[in-house]
Amino acid sequence: MKNSVTLSNVLVRRRFTTILEIDHLVIPFRQFTGLIGPNGAGKTTLLKLCCGSIKPDKGKISLGSKRIGYIPQQAEYNAHLPFTLREIVAMGRNALKPLARRLDKTDYERVDFWISRMGLYDRRRQSFRSLSGGQQQKTLIARAMVSEPDFVLMDEPGANLDPAWKGQLRDILNGLFEENPMSILLVSHELDWIPESCQRFILLDSGRIAADGLPAEVLKESSIRRIFENTLLSSERA
Amino acid sequence: MDNYFIPIIITGAFAGISIGLLGVLIVGMRMPFIGSCISHTAMVGAVYASLLGIDPMAGAVALSMAGSVGAVFIPPNRKNLDANTGQAILLSFMMGLVFLAVGLEQGSRSEMLSLLWGNVLFADWCTVFITGSLTLLLLVFMVVFDKELKAILFSRSLAMVTGKHTGLVYFLFLCFCGLILAVNLKAVGGLLIFSLLVCPAAAAYQVCRGYNAVVLFSLLFGVLSTVLGFSISYFLNMPTGACIVITSSLIFAASSLFVSIRKRD
Image (cartoon, rainbow over all chains, first blue to last red; front, side, top):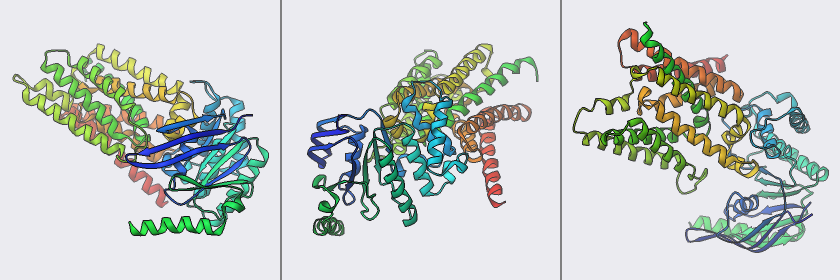
Protein backbone atom coordinates (compact mmCIF):
# COMPACT_ATOMS: atom_id res chain seq x y z
CA MET A 1 0.00 0.00 0.00
CA LYS A 2 1.26 3.43 -0.94
CA ASN A 3 1.39 6.42 1.35
CA SER A 4 -1.97 8.06 1.99
CA VAL A 5 -0.62 11.43 0.88
CA THR A 6 2.74 12.95 -0.07
CA LEU A 7 3.36 16.70 -0.29
CA SER A 8 6.50 18.07 -1.99
CA ASN A 9 7.54 21.75 -2.02
CA VAL A 10 3.97 22.91 -1.48
CA LEU A 11 3.21 26.61 -1.26
CA VAL A 12 -0.21 28.22 -0.70
CA ARG A 13 -0.50 31.99 -0.89
CA ARG A 14 -3.45 34.34 -0.44
CA ARG A 15 -2.76 37.76 -1.95
CA PHE A 16 0.67 38.65 -0.56
CA THR A 17 0.67 36.33 2.45
CA THR A 18 2.09 32.83 2.61
CA ILE A 19 -0.53 30.61 4.24
CA LEU A 20 1.35 27.34 4.03
CA GLU A 21 4.87 26.32 3.02
CA ILE A 22 5.85 22.65 3.30
CA ASP A 23 9.04 21.17 1.81
CA HIS A 24 8.21 17.53 2.30
CA LEU A 25 5.49 15.70 4.20
CA VAL A 26 4.41 12.07 4.01
CA ILE A 27 1.46 10.51 5.78
CA PRO A 28 1.84 6.73 5.51
CA PHE A 29 -1.07 4.31 5.33
CA ARG A 30 -2.48 3.16 8.69
CA GLN A 31 -1.13 6.05 10.67
CA PHE A 32 -3.14 8.24 13.02
CA THR A 33 -1.69 11.74 12.72
CA GLY A 34 -2.64 14.76 14.78
CA LEU A 35 -2.22 18.14 13.14
CA ILE A 36 -1.92 20.71 15.89
CA GLY A 37 -1.14 24.38 16.20
CA PRO A 38 -2.68 27.71 17.14
CA ASN A 39 -5.54 29.34 15.20
CA GLY A 40 -4.36 30.59 11.82
CA ALA A 41 -1.37 28.22 11.68
CA GLY A 42 -2.58 26.70 8.38
CA LYS A 43 -4.06 23.44 9.72
CA THR A 44 -7.34 23.58 7.78
CA THR A 45 -5.50 24.68 4.62
CA LEU A 46 -3.25 21.62 4.89
CA LEU A 47 -6.28 19.39 5.46
CA LYS A 48 -8.04 20.83 2.40
CA LEU A 49 -4.93 20.29 0.29
CA CYS A 50 -4.86 16.65 1.39
CA CYS A 51 -8.50 16.08 0.41
CA GLY A 52 -8.13 17.96 -2.88
CA SER A 53 -10.66 20.71 -2.22
CA ILE A 54 -8.00 23.40 -2.79
CA LYS A 55 -4.96 23.39 -5.06
CA PRO A 56 -1.51 24.66 -4.09
CA ASP A 57 0.03 27.66 -5.86
CA LYS A 58 3.25 25.66 -6.19
CA GLY A 59 4.38 22.10 -5.49
CA LYS A 60 3.00 18.62 -5.85
CA ILE A 61 0.51 16.56 -3.89
CA SER A 62 0.13 12.89 -4.64
CA LEU A 63 -2.80 11.13 -3.08
CA GLY A 64 -2.32 7.40 -2.59
CA SER A 65 -5.70 6.84 -0.96
CA LYS A 66 -8.63 5.94 -3.17
CA ARG A 67 -11.50 6.82 -0.85
CA ILE A 68 -11.54 9.81 1.44
CA GLY A 69 -13.83 10.33 4.39
CA TYR A 70 -14.03 13.99 5.35
CA ILE A 71 -15.54 15.43 8.52
CA PRO A 72 -15.67 19.20 8.07
CA GLN A 73 -16.19 22.08 10.47
CA GLN A 74 -19.79 23.14 11.04
CA ALA A 75 -19.49 26.24 8.83
CA GLU A 76 -19.07 23.99 5.80
CA TYR A 77 -22.44 22.24 5.91
CA ASN A 78 -26.09 23.28 6.11
CA ALA A 79 -27.06 21.97 9.55
CA HIS A 80 -30.40 23.84 9.41
CA LEU A 81 -31.92 21.59 6.72
CA PRO A 82 -34.55 19.05 7.85
CA PHE A 83 -32.59 15.98 6.66
CA THR A 84 -33.04 12.95 8.88
CA LEU A 85 -29.99 11.44 10.55
CA ARG A 86 -30.31 8.38 8.25
CA GLU A 87 -30.41 10.57 5.12
CA ILE A 88 -27.20 12.32 6.17
CA VAL A 89 -25.37 9.04 6.82
CA ALA A 90 -26.65 7.55 3.54
CA MET A 91 -25.02 10.44 1.61
CA GLY A 92 -21.66 8.88 2.46
CA ARG A 93 -22.50 5.90 0.18
CA ASN A 94 -22.51 8.21 -2.87
CA ALA A 95 -18.75 7.72 -3.12
CA LEU A 96 -19.27 4.02 -3.89
CA LYS A 97 -22.18 4.33 -6.34
CA PRO A 98 -22.12 5.30 -10.01
CA LEU A 99 -23.85 8.50 -11.10
CA ALA A 100 -27.65 8.35 -10.88
CA ARG A 101 -27.68 4.81 -9.39
CA ARG A 102 -29.97 4.64 -6.37
CA LEU A 103 -28.86 3.20 -3.06
CA ASP A 104 -29.96 -0.42 -2.56
CA LYS A 105 -30.67 -2.72 0.39
CA THR A 106 -26.97 -3.50 0.96
CA ASP A 107 -26.18 0.22 1.10
CA TYR A 108 -28.87 0.82 3.71
CA GLU A 109 -27.64 -2.18 5.74
CA ARG A 110 -24.21 -0.52 5.93
CA VAL A 111 -25.86 2.81 6.76
CA ASP A 112 -27.84 1.22 9.61
CA PHE A 113 -24.74 -0.66 10.81
CA TRP A 114 -22.77 2.57 11.23
CA ILE A 115 -25.71 4.38 12.81
CA SER A 116 -25.94 1.55 15.36
CA ARG A 117 -22.16 1.58 15.82
CA MET A 118 -22.41 5.24 16.83
CA GLY A 119 -25.28 4.41 19.22
CA LEU A 120 -27.80 6.50 17.31
CA TYR A 121 -30.14 3.83 15.90
CA ASP A 122 -33.14 5.02 17.95
CA ARG A 123 -32.66 8.52 16.57
CA ARG A 124 -32.26 7.53 12.89
CA ARG A 125 -35.56 9.17 11.86
CA GLN A 126 -34.88 12.32 13.89
CA SER A 127 -33.89 15.43 11.97
CA PHE A 128 -30.18 16.24 11.99
CA ARG A 129 -30.84 19.82 13.07
CA SER A 130 -32.57 18.66 16.26
CA LEU A 131 -29.54 16.63 17.42
CA SER A 132 -27.00 17.86 19.97
CA GLY A 133 -23.51 18.90 18.83
CA GLY A 134 -22.04 15.57 19.94
CA GLN A 135 -24.74 13.55 18.18
CA GLN A 136 -24.18 15.59 15.00
CA GLN A 137 -20.45 14.81 15.16
CA LYS A 138 -21.20 11.09 15.56
CA THR A 139 -23.56 11.30 12.56
CA LEU A 140 -20.81 12.87 10.45
CA ILE A 141 -18.36 10.17 11.53
CA ALA A 142 -20.91 7.51 10.49
CA ARG A 143 -21.36 9.39 7.18
CA ALA A 144 -17.62 9.28 6.57
CA MET A 145 -17.31 5.61 7.58
CA VAL A 146 -20.10 4.25 5.32
CA SER A 147 -17.97 5.22 2.34
CA GLU A 148 -15.42 2.60 3.52
CA PRO A 149 -12.59 5.14 3.46
CA ASP A 150 -8.88 4.39 3.59
CA PHE A 151 -8.05 7.97 4.62
CA VAL A 152 -10.20 9.96 7.05
CA LEU A 153 -9.68 13.69 7.51
CA MET A 154 -11.26 15.48 10.47
CA ASP A 155 -11.32 19.21 11.01
CA GLU A 156 -11.69 20.13 14.69
CA PRO A 157 -14.23 17.37 15.50
CA GLY A 158 -14.06 18.24 19.21
CA ALA A 159 -14.84 21.94 18.75
CA ASN A 160 -17.88 23.17 20.72
CA LEU A 161 -18.26 19.85 22.57
CA ASP A 162 -18.34 19.57 26.33
CA PRO A 163 -15.72 17.38 28.11
CA ALA A 164 -18.08 14.36 28.38
CA TRP A 165 -18.76 14.35 24.62
CA LYS A 166 -15.06 14.87 23.89
CA GLY A 167 -14.31 11.78 25.98
CA GLN A 168 -16.86 9.76 23.99
CA LEU A 169 -15.44 11.04 20.72
CA ARG A 170 -11.90 10.08 21.79
CA ASP A 171 -13.06 6.51 22.56
CA ILE A 172 -14.88 6.27 19.21
CA LEU A 173 -11.83 7.46 17.25
CA ASN A 174 -9.53 5.06 19.14
CA GLY A 175 -11.92 2.20 18.34
CA LEU A 176 -12.31 3.14 14.68
CA PHE A 177 -8.57 3.31 14.13
CA GLU A 178 -7.98 -0.06 15.81
CA GLU A 179 -10.77 -1.82 13.89
CA ASN A 180 -10.41 -0.37 10.38
CA PRO A 181 -7.51 -0.38 7.91
CA MET A 182 -7.17 3.37 7.34
CA SER A 183 -5.18 6.51 8.04
CA ILE A 184 -6.57 9.37 10.08
CA LEU A 185 -5.49 13.01 9.89
CA LEU A 186 -7.05 14.93 12.75
CA VAL A 187 -6.86 18.70 13.04
CA SER A 188 -7.20 20.24 16.48
CA HIS A 189 -6.02 23.31 18.30
CA GLU A 190 -6.98 21.73 21.64
CA LEU A 191 -4.36 19.32 22.86
CA ASP A 192 -6.13 17.85 25.89
CA TRP A 193 -8.50 15.39 24.22
CA ILE A 194 -6.56 13.96 21.22
CA PRO A 195 -6.96 10.11 21.19
CA GLU A 196 -4.17 7.89 22.50
CA SER A 197 -3.99 6.02 19.15
CA CYS A 198 -2.53 9.15 17.60
CA GLN A 199 1.13 8.12 17.14
CA ARG A 200 2.40 11.21 15.41
CA PHE A 201 1.93 14.92 15.94
CA ILE A 202 2.67 17.59 13.38
CA LEU A 203 2.91 21.04 14.94
CA LEU A 204 2.21 23.88 12.52
CA ASP A 205 3.23 27.45 13.23
CA SER A 206 2.63 30.33 10.80
CA GLY A 207 2.18 27.94 7.87
CA ARG A 208 5.35 25.94 8.50
CA ILE A 209 6.05 22.64 10.24
CA ALA A 210 7.57 23.57 13.61
CA ALA A 211 7.81 20.01 14.94
CA ASP A 212 7.00 16.54 13.64
CA GLY A 213 7.34 13.29 15.55
CA LEU A 214 6.10 11.26 18.47
CA PRO A 215 3.54 13.05 20.66
CA ALA A 216 5.91 13.19 23.62
CA GLU A 217 8.61 14.88 21.51
CA VAL A 218 6.29 17.41 19.89
CA LEU A 219 4.40 18.19 23.04
CA LYS A 220 7.51 19.41 24.82
CA GLU A 221 6.13 22.05 27.06
CA SER A 222 8.61 24.72 26.02
CA SER A 223 7.96 24.52 22.23
CA ILE A 224 4.18 24.43 22.62
CA ARG A 225 4.17 27.34 25.06
CA ARG A 226 6.49 29.38 22.81
CA ILE A 227 4.24 28.98 19.76
CA PHE A 228 0.92 29.54 21.50
CA GLU A 229 2.31 32.52 23.45
CA ASN A 230 3.74 34.09 20.28
CA THR A 231 0.33 33.79 18.60
CA LEU A 232 -1.37 35.28 21.62
CA LEU A 233 1.09 38.18 21.78
CA SER A 234 0.85 38.95 18.04
CA SER A 235 -2.98 38.90 18.17
CA GLU A 236 -2.92 41.22 21.20
CA ARG A 237 -0.58 43.60 19.33
CA ALA A 238 -2.95 43.54 16.31
CA MET B 1 -64.70 30.19 -15.59
CA ASP B 2 -64.80 29.40 -19.35
CA ASN B 3 -62.50 27.19 -21.49
CA TYR B 4 -60.22 30.15 -22.27
CA PHE B 5 -58.90 29.98 -18.72
CA ILE B 6 -58.07 26.24 -18.68
CA PRO B 7 -54.59 26.62 -20.27
CA ILE B 8 -53.98 29.64 -18.05
CA ILE B 9 -54.74 27.66 -14.89
CA ILE B 10 -52.64 24.69 -16.08
CA THR B 11 -49.71 27.00 -16.99
CA GLY B 12 -49.97 28.55 -13.53
CA ALA B 13 -49.97 25.11 -11.90
CA PHE B 14 -46.88 24.01 -13.88
CA ALA B 15 -45.12 27.26 -12.96
CA GLY B 16 -45.96 26.55 -9.29
CA ILE B 17 -44.63 22.99 -9.49
CA SER B 18 -41.41 23.77 -11.36
CA ILE B 19 -40.49 26.93 -9.46
CA GLY B 20 -41.50 25.29 -6.15
CA LEU B 21 -39.17 22.34 -6.92
CA LEU B 22 -36.29 24.62 -7.93
CA GLY B 23 -36.88 26.54 -4.71
CA VAL B 24 -36.15 23.40 -2.66
CA LEU B 25 -32.65 23.33 -4.11
CA ILE B 26 -32.02 27.08 -4.15
CA VAL B 27 -33.29 27.76 -0.62
CA GLY B 28 -31.63 24.57 0.70
CA MET B 29 -28.26 25.66 -0.69
CA ARG B 30 -28.73 29.07 1.00
CA MET B 31 -28.39 30.88 -2.31
CA PRO B 32 -31.77 32.54 -2.95
CA PHE B 33 -30.03 35.45 -4.67
CA ILE B 34 -28.72 33.15 -7.40
CA GLY B 35 -32.32 32.36 -8.44
CA SER B 36 -33.10 36.04 -8.44
CA CYS B 37 -29.90 36.82 -10.41
CA ILE B 38 -30.76 34.24 -13.06
CA SER B 39 -34.36 35.47 -13.37
CA HIS B 40 -33.12 39.05 -13.73
CA THR B 41 -30.55 37.92 -16.29
CA ALA B 42 -33.45 36.36 -18.20
CA MET B 43 -35.30 39.65 -17.88
CA VAL B 44 -32.29 41.55 -19.32
CA GLY B 45 -32.20 39.10 -22.25
CA ALA B 46 -35.95 39.50 -22.82
CA VAL B 47 -36.07 43.33 -22.71
CA TYR B 48 -33.02 43.80 -24.94
CA ALA B 49 -34.33 41.19 -27.40
CA SER B 50 -37.62 43.09 -27.42
CA LEU B 51 -35.70 46.35 -28.00
CA LEU B 52 -33.92 44.77 -30.99
CA GLY B 53 -37.14 43.32 -32.39
CA ILE B 54 -36.21 39.69 -31.56
CA ASP B 55 -38.54 37.24 -29.75
CA PRO B 56 -38.14 38.16 -26.02
CA MET B 57 -38.37 34.50 -24.97
CA ALA B 58 -35.35 33.60 -27.14
CA GLY B 59 -33.35 36.43 -25.56
CA ALA B 60 -34.45 35.40 -22.06
CA VAL B 61 -33.47 31.74 -22.54
CA ALA B 62 -30.12 32.60 -24.19
CA LEU B 63 -28.97 35.06 -21.53
CA SER B 64 -30.29 33.15 -18.52
CA MET B 65 -28.54 29.99 -19.73
CA ALA B 66 -25.32 31.99 -20.13
CA GLY B 67 -25.81 33.38 -16.60
CA SER B 68 -26.41 29.87 -15.23
CA VAL B 69 -23.25 28.52 -16.83
CA GLY B 70 -21.35 31.50 -15.39
CA ALA B 71 -22.69 30.72 -11.90
CA VAL B 72 -20.91 27.32 -11.99
CA PHE B 73 -17.64 29.19 -11.50
CA ILE B 74 -18.76 30.89 -8.26
CA PRO B 75 -16.86 28.91 -5.57
CA PRO B 76 -18.94 27.55 -2.64
CA ASN B 77 -16.81 29.17 0.09
CA ARG B 78 -15.00 32.37 -0.79
CA LYS B 79 -13.32 34.06 2.11
CA ASN B 80 -13.05 37.68 0.99
CA LEU B 81 -16.57 38.02 -0.44
CA ASP B 82 -19.77 36.38 0.78
CA ALA B 83 -21.54 34.65 -2.14
CA ASN B 84 -24.84 36.41 -1.34
CA THR B 85 -23.13 39.82 -1.42
CA GLY B 86 -21.61 39.10 -4.84
CA GLN B 87 -24.97 37.90 -6.16
CA ALA B 88 -26.76 40.97 -4.72
CA ILE B 89 -24.30 43.23 -6.60
CA LEU B 90 -24.95 41.25 -9.80
CA LEU B 91 -28.69 41.49 -9.17
CA SER B 92 -28.64 45.29 -8.85
CA PHE B 93 -26.49 45.51 -12.01
CA MET B 94 -29.08 43.45 -13.92
CA MET B 95 -31.89 45.66 -12.58
CA GLY B 96 -29.99 48.69 -13.84
CA LEU B 97 -29.71 47.12 -17.30
CA VAL B 98 -33.44 46.29 -17.34
CA PHE B 99 -34.54 49.81 -16.43
CA LEU B 100 -32.04 51.25 -18.92
CA ALA B 101 -33.75 49.19 -21.66
CA VAL B 102 -37.18 50.34 -20.47
CA GLY B 103 -35.95 53.93 -20.66
CA LEU B 104 -34.51 53.43 -24.15
CA GLU B 105 -37.76 51.98 -25.53
CA GLN B 106 -39.33 54.55 -27.84
CA GLY B 107 -42.67 52.85 -28.50
CA SER B 108 -45.18 51.15 -26.21
CA ARG B 109 -43.63 49.80 -23.03
CA SER B 110 -46.53 47.52 -22.14
CA GLU B 111 -44.82 44.29 -23.31
CA MET B 112 -41.60 45.16 -21.45
CA LEU B 113 -43.50 46.02 -18.29
CA SER B 114 -45.43 42.75 -18.51
CA LEU B 115 -42.04 41.00 -18.31
CA LEU B 116 -41.42 42.78 -15.02
CA TRP B 117 -44.81 42.24 -13.43
CA GLY B 118 -45.93 39.08 -15.26
CA ASN B 119 -49.12 38.26 -17.09
CA VAL B 120 -50.40 34.70 -17.06
CA LEU B 121 -53.36 35.63 -19.29
CA PHE B 122 -51.25 35.23 -22.47
CA ALA B 123 -50.95 31.45 -21.89
CA ASP B 124 -52.23 29.10 -24.61
CA TRP B 125 -51.90 25.34 -25.19
CA CYS B 126 -48.41 25.82 -26.67
CA THR B 127 -47.31 27.48 -23.40
CA VAL B 128 -48.88 24.58 -21.50
CA PHE B 129 -46.84 22.12 -23.58
CA ILE B 130 -43.55 23.98 -23.03
CA THR B 131 -44.00 24.57 -19.29
CA GLY B 132 -45.38 21.03 -18.82
CA SER B 133 -42.45 19.40 -20.64
CA LEU B 134 -39.92 21.39 -18.63
CA THR B 135 -41.69 20.56 -15.36
CA LEU B 136 -41.61 16.86 -16.26
CA LEU B 137 -37.91 17.08 -17.18
CA LEU B 138 -37.13 18.78 -13.86
CA LEU B 139 -39.03 16.06 -11.98
CA VAL B 140 -37.08 13.35 -13.82
CA PHE B 141 -33.81 15.18 -13.07
CA MET B 142 -34.65 15.39 -9.36
CA VAL B 143 -35.62 11.71 -9.17
CA VAL B 144 -32.63 10.41 -11.17
CA PHE B 145 -30.02 12.52 -9.36
CA ASP B 146 -31.75 12.34 -5.99
CA LYS B 147 -28.74 11.15 -3.99
CA GLU B 148 -26.32 13.62 -5.62
CA LEU B 149 -28.69 16.56 -5.08
CA LYS B 150 -29.16 15.68 -1.41
CA ALA B 151 -25.38 15.65 -0.90
CA ILE B 152 -24.98 19.02 -2.67
CA LEU B 153 -27.78 20.49 -0.57
CA PHE B 154 -26.12 19.38 2.65
CA SER B 155 -22.71 20.70 1.62
CA ARG B 156 -21.48 21.43 -1.89
CA SER B 157 -17.84 21.55 -0.79
CA LEU B 158 -18.15 18.25 1.10
CA ALA B 159 -19.94 16.63 -1.85
CA MET B 160 -17.12 17.74 -4.14
CA VAL B 161 -14.52 16.09 -1.90
CA THR B 162 -16.28 12.80 -1.21
CA GLY B 163 -18.83 12.37 -4.02
CA LYS B 164 -18.67 11.65 -7.72
CA HIS B 165 -19.71 13.93 -10.61
CA THR B 166 -20.89 16.64 -8.20
CA GLY B 167 -19.80 19.35 -10.65
CA LEU B 168 -21.88 17.85 -13.47
CA VAL B 169 -25.05 17.57 -11.37
CA TYR B 170 -24.60 21.13 -10.07
CA PHE B 171 -24.12 22.37 -13.65
CA LEU B 172 -27.33 20.58 -14.78
CA PHE B 173 -29.22 22.11 -11.83
CA LEU B 174 -28.09 25.61 -12.86
CA CYS B 175 -29.13 24.89 -16.47
CA PHE B 176 -32.61 23.98 -15.20
CA CYS B 177 -32.65 27.22 -13.20
CA GLY B 178 -31.89 29.18 -16.36
CA LEU B 179 -34.47 27.38 -18.51
CA ILE B 180 -37.34 27.29 -16.04
CA LEU B 181 -36.96 30.85 -14.81
CA ALA B 182 -36.75 32.15 -18.40
CA VAL B 183 -39.80 30.20 -19.57
CA ASN B 184 -41.91 31.30 -16.59
CA LEU B 185 -40.76 34.92 -16.83
CA LYS B 186 -43.72 36.06 -18.90
CA ALA B 187 -46.30 34.38 -16.68
CA VAL B 188 -45.01 35.32 -13.23
CA GLY B 189 -42.76 38.31 -14.04
CA GLY B 190 -39.07 38.87 -13.40
CA LEU B 191 -39.64 40.92 -10.26
CA LEU B 192 -42.19 38.57 -8.71
CA ILE B 193 -40.71 35.17 -9.61
CA PHE B 194 -38.29 35.54 -6.66
CA SER B 195 -41.12 35.25 -4.15
CA LEU B 196 -42.47 32.09 -5.80
CA LEU B 197 -38.96 30.66 -5.76
CA VAL B 198 -38.39 31.28 -2.06
CA CYS B 199 -41.73 31.24 -0.18
CA PRO B 200 -43.10 27.72 -0.97
CA ALA B 201 -39.72 26.06 -0.35
CA ALA B 202 -39.02 28.10 2.81
CA ALA B 203 -42.49 27.15 4.12
CA ALA B 204 -41.85 23.45 3.34
CA TYR B 205 -38.44 23.55 5.04
CA GLN B 206 -40.10 24.89 8.18
CA VAL B 207 -42.87 22.32 8.53
CA CYS B 208 -41.30 19.11 7.16
CA ARG B 209 -38.87 16.49 8.33
CA GLY B 210 -36.93 14.62 5.63
CA TYR B 211 -35.99 15.67 2.09
CA ASN B 212 -38.85 13.87 0.29
CA ALA B 213 -41.46 15.58 2.44
CA VAL B 214 -39.86 18.98 1.70
CA VAL B 215 -40.00 18.31 -2.06
CA LEU B 216 -43.65 17.22 -1.91
CA PHE B 217 -44.80 20.13 0.25
CA SER B 218 -42.84 22.74 -1.71
CA LEU B 219 -44.49 21.45 -4.90
CA LEU B 220 -47.93 21.62 -3.26
CA PHE B 221 -47.35 25.11 -1.83
CA GLY B 222 -46.11 26.27 -5.26
CA VAL B 223 -49.26 25.00 -7.02
CA LEU B 224 -51.45 26.44 -4.27
CA SER B 225 -49.75 29.85 -4.65
CA THR B 226 -50.27 30.04 -8.41
CA VAL B 227 -53.75 28.48 -8.70
CA LEU B 228 -55.18 30.28 -5.66
CA GLY B 229 -53.44 33.52 -6.64
CA PHE B 230 -54.84 33.31 -10.14
CA SER B 231 -58.36 32.54 -8.89
CA ILE B 232 -58.28 35.52 -6.51
CA SER B 233 -57.03 37.75 -9.34
CA TYR B 234 -59.80 36.46 -11.68
CA PHE B 235 -62.71 36.79 -9.27
CA LEU B 236 -61.61 40.06 -7.64
CA ASN B 237 -60.20 41.57 -10.88
CA MET B 238 -56.72 42.22 -9.43
CA PRO B 239 -53.18 41.98 -10.96
CA THR B 240 -52.28 38.28 -11.38
CA GLY B 241 -48.56 38.35 -10.47
CA ALA B 242 -49.19 40.36 -7.32
CA CYS B 243 -51.96 37.98 -6.17
CA ILE B 244 -49.67 34.96 -6.71
CA VAL B 245 -46.84 36.55 -4.73
CA ILE B 246 -49.10 37.65 -1.87
CA THR B 247 -50.64 34.15 -1.69
CA SER B 248 -47.19 32.50 -1.53
CA SER B 249 -46.10 34.96 1.18
CA LEU B 250 -49.26 34.18 3.18
CA ILE B 251 -48.54 30.45 2.87
CA PHE B 252 -45.08 31.11 4.32
CA ALA B 253 -46.61 33.20 7.14
CA ALA B 254 -49.12 30.41 7.89
CA SER B 255 -46.34 27.80 8.03
CA SER B 256 -44.32 30.01 10.43
CA LEU B 257 -47.39 30.35 12.63
CA PHE B 258 -47.97 26.59 12.51
CA VAL B 259 -44.37 25.89 13.56
CA SER B 260 -44.48 28.38 16.45
CA ILE B 261 -47.81 26.92 17.71
CA ARG B 262 -46.42 23.37 17.44
CA LYS B 263 -43.31 24.39 19.41
CA ARG B 264 -45.45 25.94 22.16
CA ASP B 265 -47.45 22.70 22.48
